[in-house]
Each structure stands twice: as C-alpha cells, then as structure tokens.
Image (cartoon, rainbow, N blue to C red):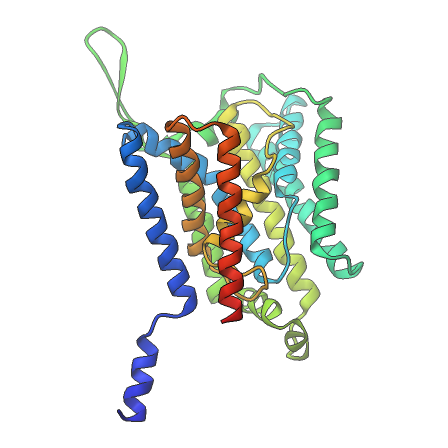
Length: 337
C-alpha cells in the first residue's frame, strides 16, 4: 500500500474522541430501549417533555463544566451558585424589580461567583478543587442566610414563564367548555439549551478563546510560551461556568415558580458526569459540547427511567455514582492509551 493510500486510510479512521462520543450515543440508545420495556408511559409525549425539562438544567451546567474541565480544572460550586442566583432573582422581584431584569441580574450573580473562582485559581494559585469547594459552601451559605433557609414564593405568573412556557403550543376548546391540549409545544428550557449548546460549540471550535481553552488544558506551559494569556483564559472559563449555572438556576426556579435556597444539591456531580460521559477528560485538553449534551441526556434518561421503574432515590444515587466512577475509569484508560 502506498504512503498516500495509508494517509487517506488513517484520515478516515475514527479518533478516540469520536469513538467515545459514539459509545455514549449507543449507551443513550440502549437506555431508551431498556426503559421502554419498564413502563408503557416512557415513550409518551408528556414523559418526553419531562426528560427535556430535566435535562435542560443538567445540560446548561454541563456546558460550563466542560469548558472548565477542558482547561484542566473542575467546578464543584455550580449547584450552590445555581441556588444563589435564584435567590438573588427572587429577592429582587420581591423588591419590585420586573422579572426579566431580575433574572438577568441573577445570572450575573452566577457569573460573578465564577469570576471569583477564576481569580482565586489564577492569582492565589489555589487548586480548582479546593477553590470551588470553598465557593460551594460560601454560595450556599449566602443563599440560606439571605432567605433564612425559607423558600421565596408568590413571585407572580411571569416568573414561571421561562420554565413552564413553550413554543407552538396548540390548545382547542371542547364542546363542554374545557380546553384540551392538542400539542404541548416545545419547552422554552429545551430551546434555551439548544441555543447555549450551539453557542458554546461555536466558541470552542471557531473562536480564539476556544483554541486557547484547549491549548491551556493540553499543555499550560506550552500555551504560555506560545503567547496565550493563561490566567485570562481560565478566568473566562470559570466565569462562563458560573453564568451558565446562574442561567440554570433561573430555569429551575422558574419551573418551580418558587425560589428554593436548598435546590441544586449534588447537581455538580451530574454536570461532571455528563461532561466525562460525553468524552471530556479530567486531565484537560479534551472535550466537546456535543458529547456533553449526549452525556446530559444519558443522566436525564437514566434518572427518569429509574423513577418510572419505581427505583428508590437511594438506589438511584448508587447507580449514578457507579456511572461516574465508570466514566472516569474509561477516561483514565483512554489517557494511558
């Protein structure tokens, strides 16, 4: 075989990242196939919408988490930041601010937490694990202190629009005078997740900041010698993670139509699991938004299917934990190879 033929053949061989993404996609298909036998309602339209709504929050967190993991870091604070962002928005609405500006400021509060994480990691040289663990406690403590650990309710119907509204919803009136939902529509959170995923993928693949994120995660010293501003790149990644956590908080609290300062507990593990299952390497330098979206849907389908099968919450925790360990183990094998 000639050298040209060999090169052509190599170009068409799937990369390790592609194989990982393909295996995740096959896993998702297998889960859907298995759970379709556990409950006849699994394939119903309402359950499909439920999965979309559940996955939208995990997916938003996973987008930001993937960017941080690619830099070689980790963000354990996203669950607490999610709650704090919701509390900020809820208190501002109670103070008389309209819903949209309040949600924008709530998201900004999440971005501020991420910015602080980035500053501490880069300027104080504290490891991401310790830094974000500290922020997890600080953000949760502030959220509980501001609310007295009590939920914030009576925020108005407009507050629930983002989490419960949908595009192309079709409702017709029946002869008895009661409305009948013909098509429930496409949920706003699902559309928001799609927009953020496309934007995140565009930034990682097509923009300079994306190339810098990958280069920092692959070899930080080499990136610095190549002229990459490593500190600024890391701060950008953590800020993006915080902002997306804040946005996820707006979606989740809007779905509940109530701000719960205790929400978001353990959500960081779902986000990490979604990123790693989707192909992101905890060693840094490897990952994709599309893979993380597949990972988010695996977590979402897994939780939904287990709930419909009547599996207890404690068993679900065990299963998700095993999935996380398995995903990290596969990542280690891939790095050794």
